[in-house]
Image (cartoon, rainbow over all chains, first blue to last red; front, side, top):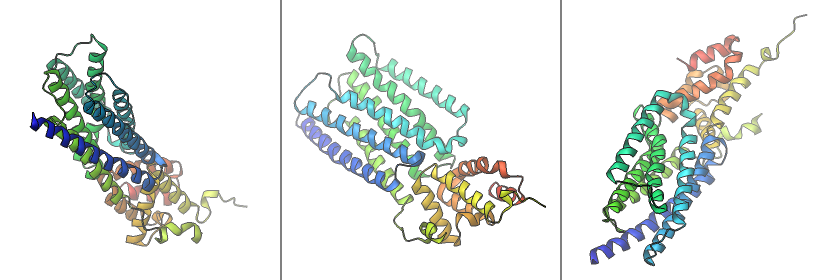
Length: 235
Length: 99
C-alpha cells in the first residue's frame, strides 16, 4: 500500500515536471519556427495538442488527489489533443507526401484496424454505458494516431526523414502503447496511478521533448548576420 | 524587328529558379528556407539564384538537410519550373537537380 502511494506521488510529480517542460519547449519552438508554411502550422497544432494534454493531465491528477471517480472534462481535453496531434502528423508529413504511396497508407490502415480489433477483443469491450463508449473511444483515437505515426517511422527507415523528425512519431507510438496498456489493466481492475504502464506515457512526453530540442537544433536561425539574410539590402 | 520574350531577358531565369526554390522551401517553413539558404551560402558562397549555374550545390545542401527526403523538395521545384523547361538553361538546371 505504501509502495502504491509512493508510486502515485512520483508518477504525478514526474508527470507535472515532464509535461510542463514539454509545453514550454513547444512554445519556444513556435517562436523560433514561425507560423508560416506547412511545418509552421503543424508546430502550432502540436503545441495546442500538448497544451490540451497538459490540462487533461492536471484535471486527471486533481481527480486522483480528491478521489473523484466521475467523468470529467479531462476526456474532452484528451480528445481535443488527439485531434490537433493528428493534424500535426498529417501537415508535418505533407511535404514528403510524394514519398508515401497509397499502398503504404492502405497497408498501415489495415494493420492498425487489426490491432484495434485485437485490443477490443482482449479487453472484452461493450458499448452499453456512456462510460464504456468513452473508454472504447480512446483506443479508436489511438489507432487513428497510429496511422501518421507508423507512416512517419516507415519514412525514417527508408531514409526519407531524419531521426529527429521521427522522434515525434516514435513518441506517439509510445503514447499509444501506454494507452492500450492502461485500457487493458483498467479493464481487469489492476490499474492505479503510478502503475508500470504509466512509464511509456512519461517516456512518450520525454521523447517529444527530445524531438523539440533536436528540431530547434536542426532549424537553428540564430545567425541573423549571415549574408544570406541580407539579400534584400543587396538587391 | 525581333521581339524578345520576357523570360529571355537577362536575370529572369535566375530569378525564376530562385523564386521556385524559395517558394518550395517556404511552403515547408520560413526556418527551413533560411536554414537551406544559410547552408548554401556558408558552404558554396552561393545564393538561390546562383543555383541555375550550380544545381549540384543545391542538391548537396538539400541532401545534407533532408537526407533522402530531398527528393520531395526536388519534385516540388520540378512542378514549379516545368512550364519553363523549354528554355535550355532551365532544362539543364532541372536535369541537374534530378540526376
